[in-house]
Image 1 (spheres, rainbow, N blue to C red):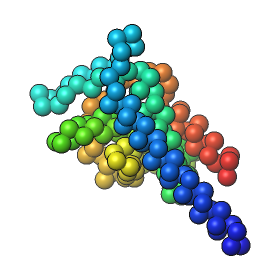
Image 2 (spheres, rainbow, N blue to C red):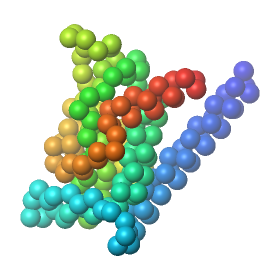
Image 3 (cartoon, helix red, strand yellow):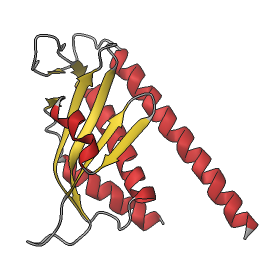
Image 4 (cartoon, rainbow, N blue to C red):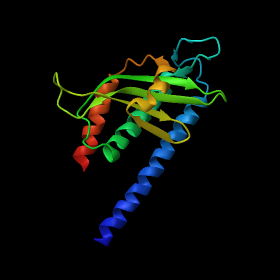
Length: 171
């Protein structure tokens, strides 16, 4: 019994270290200026005060992979019952007044099989110095005041579902 508790504790520490490493990598990649041969994603500005985000497609893929991994890990550990479906998932960004860049994943999930009676709950995952995941309406402000990033390589709702299923299988 003590060995199981010790193993769970060590796995939790390793998992936390992995998340910290991924967030650090994203911040480093976001700060790098891509060379001219790489393609970039330019997002439109919504206000005069907000700056346009320029990020290489490789860096954008790293951001997507990281925020999906963080979000699904949090769902796996903290959300009961586990979500069975996702919809209206968008990747967004926001510059805080201190110019800190936040990447935000917004969407809805259901813990019931998709049908007409399924209840959908909003979620918001934010990558900052660590990460935050908000369930319910508390994170809506971040989603409403941020700018969408056009990510067309894959459907984000599908990626979330696949990664969460992978975590559930490993359990």
